[in-house]
Length: 452
Image (spheres, rainbow, N blue to C red):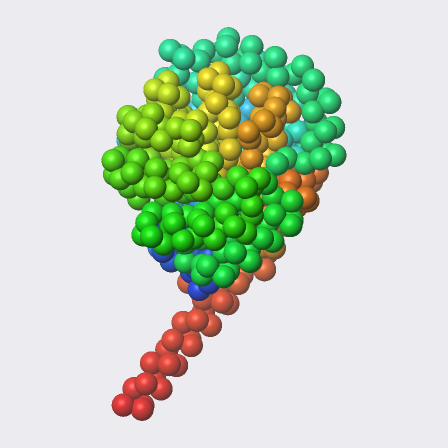
C-alpha cells in the first residue's frame, strides 16, 4: 500500500513575552521599555507524531496578542494540506496568502497580516529544512538556481530585477560555493554586537560591556543614540575610549529624527568616527534617507529593519538612499520575500548587514546571511551580522558565537523552535511567570489596602 501522505494536522499559536524591560535590555530613543515578544506558531504534522514547523513574528510587548491572532487566522489555509507538497514549494503557499484579495486588502504586503504570513511561511521553510535533514542556510545554498529564483517574490521588481537576472545571479553564486561553505563551517560569519549600547544603560555598564566585546573578538559594536545630544557625545566618547580606534562603532537612532536634525546630529558625532547611522529618520522616507546620505558622508546610512517589503527596498536601492541594507527575517513575508531582497542587494552591489536581536531574530537571520555569503554575494567584505546577547537560552538550537563570529548551524531547520518550558513559563497572560507577577501585584494591592 502507498504510504499515507504527511499532512498539517494542527496549527498552535502562542503569545510569548519576556520581561526585558526590567533591565532596560533593548531600550532605545523610540522604545524605552520593550518587553521582547514572539507571536509564535507551531505546525504539527501527521499521521502520528510527525516533524513540526516553527515560526514567529517579533514584537516588543503590547499588541503581541493582535499579531498572534493574525497568525491564528491563517490556520484554515494550512490545516489538512499535504506537508510534503508545501515543503517542495513553499512559494505556492506564499503566493496564495499574499494573493488572497481579502487578506491583501489589509496591507497590501505590509503590516500585521503580512508579518503573520511571514511567520507561517517561515514555519513551512523550517519544516522543509527538517524534511531534507539540513539547516536552512544549506538548503538554500544547495538549491537549484531556477527553483530558488522561482521561490523569490519578484513582483513589482521587473524594472530593476527580472527572473532571468535573478537566475544569473544565483548561477554565478554557485561558483566557489563549496569552498565558501567549508570556510563558513570552519570560521563562522562575522558579527557585531549591540549589547553594550542600549540607551538605558549607565556609562559604567556601557564601558564594561564594550571592553568585553572587544576581548570577545568583536570588531564592531553599536550604540543607540537620539534622545539627548550631550548624552550621546558623552557616551560615544566613553565607548571610543573603551574600544580604541581600530574598532568600528555604528550608531542607531531608531527613526527618532527629522531629516535636518539627522544631518546635524550625525555631523556633531562625526569626531568619534561612527561607521554608520542606522534608521536616522522615518523608515518610509526614501528621499529623506537619500538626502541624509548625501549630507553625512563618509558616515554610511543603514536601514531596513522596519522596511515592510521588497518594493520599499527596491526604492531605497534605486534612489541611492542607503549604503547598508538591513533586512529582517520576521518583518516581511518570510523567506520568499527575503530572497527577493537579497537578490536586489546583490543586483545593486550593496552589502547586507541584517538586523537581529529581539526574540530569535539572531537564530533566524543567520541562515539568510550565510546563504547570501555561500551562494549569492560570495563575500563577507563589509558585512556583519548583528548579535544581541539576550534570550538565546530559550531556543532548542541557539546561536553560537565564537571569536566574534556566528558559528554555522548544523541542526536541520530554521533554528526557530522555542523550548517547551519557555512556552509554559512566558505565555501571556497565564504562563507561570506572568501569573506569578499578577498574583504578586494583587497581593501588594490587598496589603496596601489593608495598611490604608
